[in-house]
Length: 102
Image (cartoon, rainbow, N blue to C red; front, side):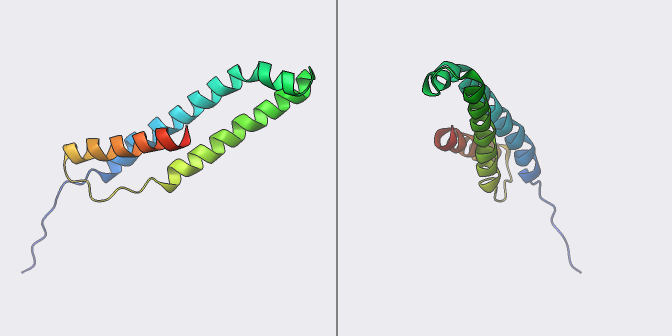
């Protein structure tokens, strides 16, 4: 007779915690950069506000797409079986994402 041992796996929980954090972190940083780069962009484009704001918006969208794409590329978690390993894996992934991409 074959017996199956069921173990608790926290991988799905890791994904459900990781994704909202990195997406919200990316959006918040992009909004902060967008808000604080307006003056710089207007200066670069010699007071042509419409071109400066359009370029700034493109940078914001590009920043979000690039960082969310990177976050999805590094999302892989391996067999997380305890809450302690869940916390360690999430802190490594989110910390690495914050350090590298933002």
